[in-house]
Amino acid sequence: MDTTPRPAPGQLTYRDAAAADVKQLVALIESAYRGESARATWTSEADLLEGQRTDEQGVLDVIEADGSRLLMVESDGELVACCQLEHRGPAAYFGMFAVDPGAQGGGLGKRILAEAERLARAEWGVGEMHMTVIVQRADLIAWYERRGYRRTGQLTPFPYGDERFGIPQRDDLAFELLVKPLG
Image 1 (cartoon, rainbow, N blue to C red):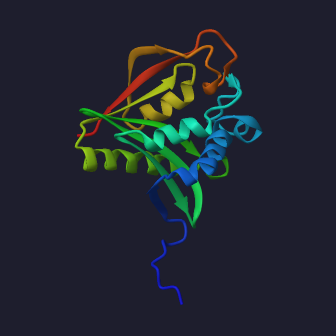
Image 2 (cartoon, rainbow, N blue to C red):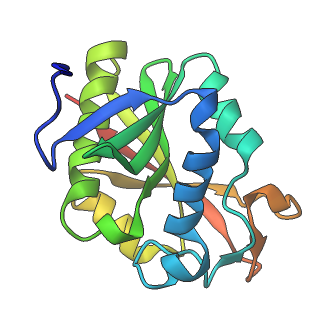
Image 3 (cartoon, rainbow, N blue to C red):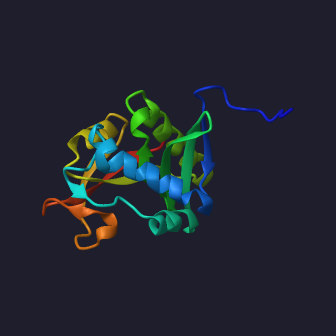
């Protein structure tokens, strides 16, 4: 009989992704941001970008980079979300955040973001969390603002011409840096 402790139903478990997880992670990220499954959610970028959100090499690069972690979030043994944490000196960077479209809307994203912030503080001793969001994603920026992030006005151009990040559907895309103190 297996006596390995199992999480309670609905309890989230977090683990670092490995190379063997790449295909599953790409499928999750694509489903959250692109294609028909994403169109039904508020996280969709389909009106701004077509094509892929990421690829296997991009995910593997995050997993293997020094000072970077790609957290897999599971519930009842199923992958429900992921996020990237990267140590950048006095701050951590939060990115590649994806929640399964079927699991959105119930507070899961809020719980995962809070755990990512806790991990960054506990493991790296950082004082801030940084992220970049496409400025046209007003609903998403508002969601982060409700969680204590502030807009900085610091913009970075979208990487036009690099289809690894998608095919832009407009010519004014840019990323804005959002910052939250992690006191």
